[in-house]
Length: 151
Length: 447
Image 1 (tube, each protein chain N blue to C red):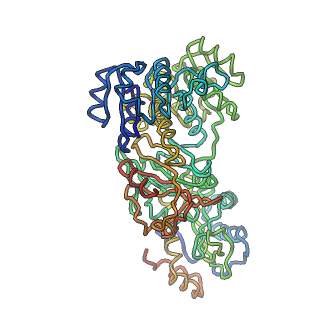
Image 2: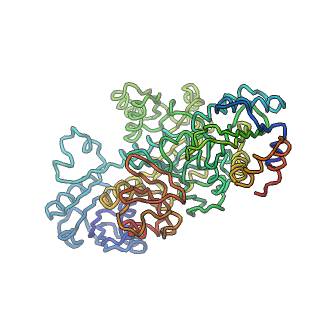
Image 3: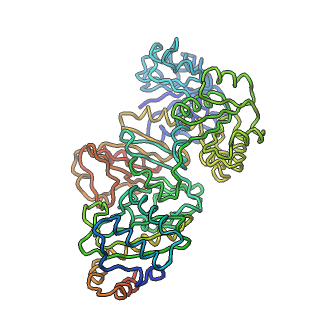
């Protein structure tokens, strides 16, 4: 699974309205729903939130990767949000997350699901990628940045 | 330490090998010359031909200056008499294996205390406890607890549907902040390795990992394991193990059905356990099993005295829809075969008993201990000494024995699942996995 096959400018949010974790997840899921990528956005939202309640998906260096395997989608779908002020995703270092990647995979997803999460974390925690994303003026620029990162 | 072991069956053989490898001075008393031949090839021990209930034989084995006496023949009477003799010789620590459940019940007429024996060990009770532990998890094939139950060590067979099949350890490391586990070993075929970042978890592997109990359900999610309790349980075989498992699981709220074709056995259980349903039938009686809801069964536990029946009927039950099957298997060859056939977990009474005895023997050296049956590896909880050599240095810079890895660190009330940047402090408890060749080095490391 290549990141640029999952993410395009239409599923990137540079200035989300949400200030709280679950609001942001809702906003990102509806972005996927608007693109008609999900069979049941409602089910996907419930599954991401359930998973998030199990344990927060915040990681160090301001990255968070909310995710789930869900019957609400037939294909993997992903969104990215840059939250300039950061949102608490329960990271181990206690810092808020600014770079949020959402991945939803079908219920029976296997290797590729975990690999896509790992790859995205590896990309997003790089300081120069973070700087470039913050500089990006448009979703297109952010998408380009992410597509060009060497992993 | 000078150790005398009476009885060189599977249990005695296993204990002798393990303790000899750790440098203890072992004498084995066995009356069957055939068993001496095998022992001589495989274990570095003094072999004494004779009966353990004879004082002369025990003297020949060196009972007068023994530190530990372990009687593990197949016969309670021999074990008890041998231990009574050892008591007369003032051996400081004495362990007897007993088969009769009466002896280990608190209200029994004779018990270990009255006989001056330090520990009675009953294989059936040990096995039943082990089965109940793993029956509670959706997929574990092995499970042990550390740090008063806050830290878990789990063995899990990776199916092709497991999302981590095909993933490298380095990839898992990226999402470690969410799924905090340390994969301490991977068993593939008959090899067990301590994995590095570039190693890939493959379908068919058994992975061994350490995690906090409180993180268990999030880690189960990572592995694609459904949240399911052992609600509907079928037990094949109403013998002693079956009885103990049925009693424990029924007490914990499971619906337990015991299958046994022997009407007397059924009556015995029925008279003692009123919250358990007894099916007096044969395990081949598929119609009855279907009517009793085998299709919705969560766990099928096969604990007859026949290894082959246990394996076969486990497979039959799985074919009929049971989610998970656990089988009691004695024979070492079948023990290695069964997991590859699709039995989810196998318990060996002999290895479990030997493990329990070794755990007891090593109390004092380590806080708690689990043995991995397949590889002879150990997981042990050590106290970190106050010397400066190993403390306050990042783990990745420690000169740690290569066949071992730290899975968890307990600091006061807090449990850490460590990454390479974490360090040890004096007084910490470290939960350490060691391959057989590194156990001694790890002990030195913490001494």
